[in-house]
Image (cartoon, rainbow, N blue to C red; front, side, top):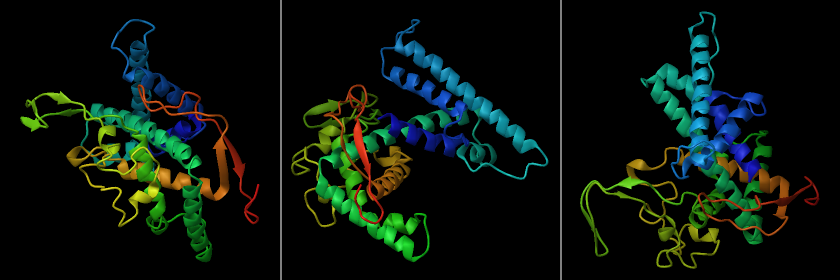
Length: 314
């Protein structure tokens, strides 16, 4: 899974703070994030050598790097001869928001964490599920070949927003990956009023952890819930009743993940280039497990074969 993590991390680091992929500073920050992630859900034992202690140290290092980038950017913005402005979230927050320094630090820390970890898992799961469903890969490739043909006709080599809106089956694949894979295992919520549910009383003020798989794998809502079936999401198909009540891979309501559309866009663009240029299969059997986060014990090793442009063969 490391290539997926690196891909999504580099994308977020570039868009949040204009950090270039491959640079020493960018890679050093990524390694600190790996340590930070390992301690996020560990036992809160603040002793030297524990995962929690290492995570706290890495968090402080990450915040230090972000703060240094912020000060560097402020210095650039204050220069009278500064004629260029970095097109990233840090620059926007410093110039157009009323957020305090601490709030910007927290925002960038959270966005870098949320913006690359779950997306990399979604990419790995899509690769895994599609490898076991050749029919879906075939339909996905046909959809993207048609998009590529339209690009060629208009003399453009870049994807447009109109191209993205034509990725109908791609969205079915993404939805099914998120439903079956359950990238986010549970949500943190607080009860704001007394609730009586299914014979249970949940008092106001209690904290609850809704487990999303309990909904996404419910056979009363999804036919054959443990099967990868992207066609269930096609318009008019009644095997998936998708609305906020029973499909919530990114939460829902006022706490819906603000980056959900960006995450889907990431996966769609990745799949576009993947299915047009490569075939793949598992190099050895592997299976996702879910503690503490969704992961593959062997890292999901795959063999990749480039598709020749004209012959469509290796």
